[in-house]
Length: 230
Image (cartoon, rainbow, N blue to C red; front, side):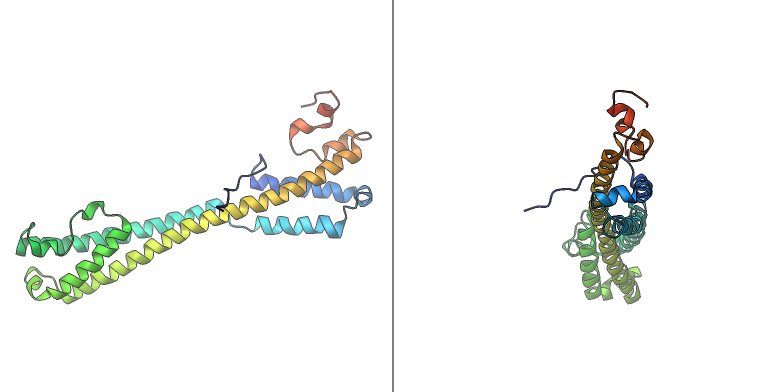
């Protein structure tokens, strides 16, 4: 069964989730005696949540991973430009020698070069290397050398590597985004439980302490008791 796309349960940013949770942890530690009675303790709850917050804070952000993806895309684009330039040079040599519509030129599969998708392009590069190597004696009259063909092979290999690295960067970003959402949701569920307990402890006795456990403004003590204090 295909895994469902992860969705955030909380309406605040990841950074706000971290700071808000730390604030509520501080309040809970202040109210340690009351939380102990609810079997919510330092070692089993507070310290564990704090460790999970630290791990969450150290996850790479989507902005970081987006930058890596953009860099990989730029590198691939530069190599792609160089590869097309090399292929065009051999195409021109072929057209000069054999004619643009000749069967010999067609062997290189230049058709549609500018519109080729990435996998098609590095496949084309390999074919041009193979065919040009076989026909080097004739192509040399147009300035095509064994070194030029070797450069084309190197660039073709580099382009395939750059394509794979870009794909890896995209996949890494998607996976990390999902992992971050799941980790944030896990922390948020614990935060909600902590705050629900804290509000229940103080709802009848302390407005100030009750409000220490409010995550969103609409949940303040006044709104729960019919008095708007937004």
